[in-house]
Length: 181
Length: 174
Image (tube, rainbow over all chains, first blue to last red; front, top):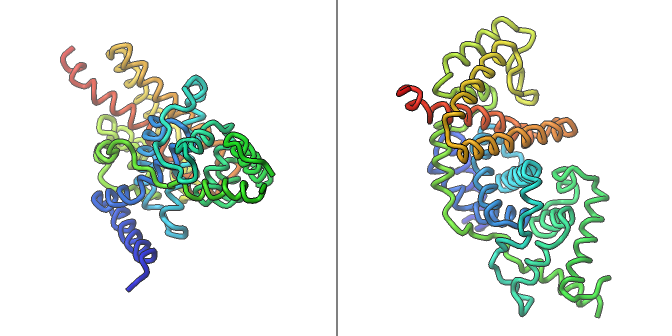
């Protein structure tokens, strides 16, 4: 019997292959499997529920269109997450004015932070970070991008990426009343 | 003390759930878009033909593209995936301009609020296309950027075609 993680990867690979052949039901299964992660990523990058929903939809539509070109050199989830990040960044550039006037804390995820008595404190602190610092923290600190991947995706130098992560951590610690290093 | 408190931040970050369920089921909208646009994912080498297969001007555009390829072998529509782009030959551009002209004419038939919404969508698509083009200039080998780039101009053609289709009955009645 395969380990659950490997089993899930094999199942995903089979679904990806079927979806690439035009099987919409297989693609729906991939959606069910990966939508929460994609939505979580989009929500934390945008800080807005409606924008996150739009970006999640756009990401899956873009993924479907590009699926035939997916060569499985990377994991499907990694590939899909990159599409989601590019979708968020493209939308943000296209809607720069709208984002600037939007309430930055609107649509915060209602998730619990087990380490705090005030569950939304950490999410709110992340949402309130300066945009570049938030993007780096979300990609590297939460969703497992390497600095090189995040830097390439965000169009910044790797050193800048590391500096932004350090900045984000400092601001988070400050916002949560923790001592900074 | 400092180390333990800093570790506390790491623990808090580590304990945040990475998965957040969307507040509503997004699949019906996604599936609707996929069904409307095409029946299956487009292989890269044939994406150009599929991308312009809007119902209204499909024949005209396909004709233009096919003839453009025949007439301009030095500027193939699709050389290979890594240099894929929207076709640039004159006949394709003319047909595309014609589609955009029809779109503009039909747009005037719509109420101002709908028109504004559509024009805003078009602006977003074009801005995204330009942003991705710039990103590709610095990272030309990125398959993700390349695929997103294709999607943006497919979206633009789809938008034109959707408006033309949606106003078809109005035009027929007048």
